Length: 154
Image 1 (cartoon, helix red, strand yellow):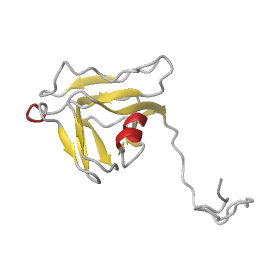
Image 2: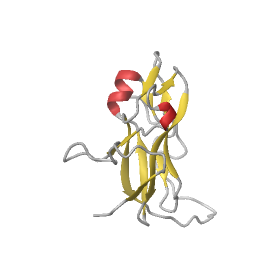
Image 3: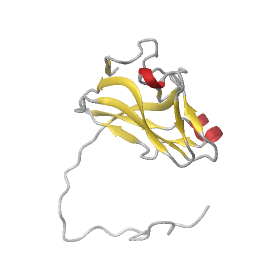
Image 4: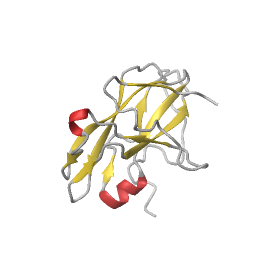
C-alpha cells in the first residue's frame, strides 16, 4: 500500500484530523479545512459565485509514480453548491508546498467554511507518462473529428 507522508504547517491546528477514509469502500480520503488562527472562530465566508483557497494546514509527500487528485464532496455539492472549479485538481509527486483546496460556491446562498470541516476528498492515483510524437497522419475512427455533443443526447 502506498504511503503519503504528511507534515503539518507550523500554524496548523493539530486537533484537525489528517485525511481519512470514512468508510471501508471509500475511494477518496476526506480533507479538512485547517484555518489560520485568525479565521478559526468565524470561518471563511464564501459568497455565491466566489472562490477561495482553503488551507488544509498540510504539506504532503506523494510517492513517485502517483498523483493526489482533489475532488468535491457530493453532499456539499448537492446541498450547498460547493464545488472545486478545477476538478480534479492534481497535486504532483514532486510538489512540497502547502496543500490548499480551491473551493467555489456555485449555490444561491452564502456558505461558511468552518474550521475542521470536510471540504474535499483526495484520491491517490497512478500516473502514466506518455511520449508525444508528431505524426503526418492519424488513424480513422467512426467518430472522426466530431466533438462537443456530436454523439447525440441521452
